[in-house]
Image 1 (cartoon, rainbow, N blue to C red):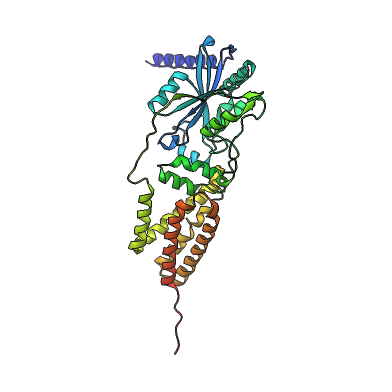
Image 2 (image 1 turned 180 degrees about the horizontal axis):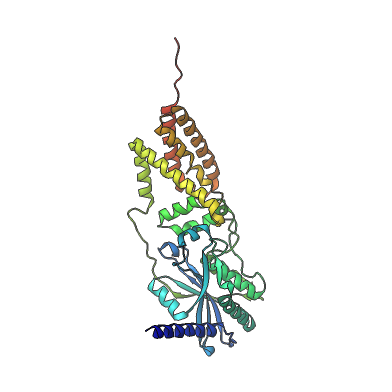
Amino acid sequence: MKFSTHLLVICFLLGLFSISKTYSQERTLSANSKISILTCGTANEAYSLFGHTAIRISDPENFIDVVYNYGAFDFSTPNFVLKFIKGDLQYFAAIHPYSDFINEYTYEHRDVYEQQLQISLPLRQDLYNNLQQSLTSGESYYTYKFIDKNCTSMVVDIINKSLKQNIVVKKGDTAITYRSILYPYFDNHFYEKLGTSIIFGKKVDQDGTQIFLPFELLESLKKINYNGQKLVTQTIPVLTFEKQIESSWWNNPYSYLIALLLILILNIKKLNQFYFLLLSLIGLFFIFAGFYSFHEELAWNYNVLLFNPLLLVLLFFTLTNNSRYIYKLAIANLICLVIYLILLANKAHLLIVLPMIITSGVLLVRTAIKNKKRIPIII
């Protein structure tokens, strides 16, 4: 039994070695080879809200038809969630047969568009060699960054590396912020939109000058010229499906507005305290993530002016019935809200957080009035 187990392990390892060696060998592409960029459509799951980018290598003479995917990660990674939050989770490149790739997206009912790169055979060979090298070297693994390092930006980088110049760059409106670019992707996903609005800090308010989303790359490729001709001449819809609009009884702005309205109308002390507690704990998480995480998108998060940890101090003095400090902290939080409102004047997420600003403002004004020290009138 023990010998048999060892034999199976040895055979398995030899099989892996054989597969690895086969893929690591550099083949010479034929004149009929094609290299295409695949842009995959969005879906309702959180990981698929922005689509996906991959590279297809097709060469019938060499029996090659594979897809290189830079968006793979391992759920079994120890401390997966903490690594993702910290920003040191390792993503890696993977290779799949084209048929398997298409079958997966057919099953998920997600669109796939193909754009063939109009480049010479030597450049196709260079790109193919670079892709192969990225699978068998340390380049296969990379530290995921929401804007700077993802499945789309990695494809852009390897194309530009192979063409030996920065040909693939963003074409279109570069004066719109990253935050504004993201907003349309959250249609019918209200709380995902709210969550990203408040967890992202200053970086996403910068002008979106670089390609970081799949459909940005698709649109840019249509407009890029290389050696006097279009880099891609057509966009072929490989798979198309009717858009499924997901409806939810709770994941919508109405549940959000009703909840806040009930807090204001009911004006229950315990409920108000719970609301302040929730905001302050979220703010503490933002501060922790800003210092702990390598994700630059989470740093300098001015949304803590709304999700203010000072509310926790306010709650402490509320429990000790210290009217003097309750009043001072209520005023301090109101000042923070005013500053926050000024900062949001030209930001994309002003309207989505405005109901929370109003709710917090009303509750803080009530708290300040209730705890303001009355000046005795001497007759």
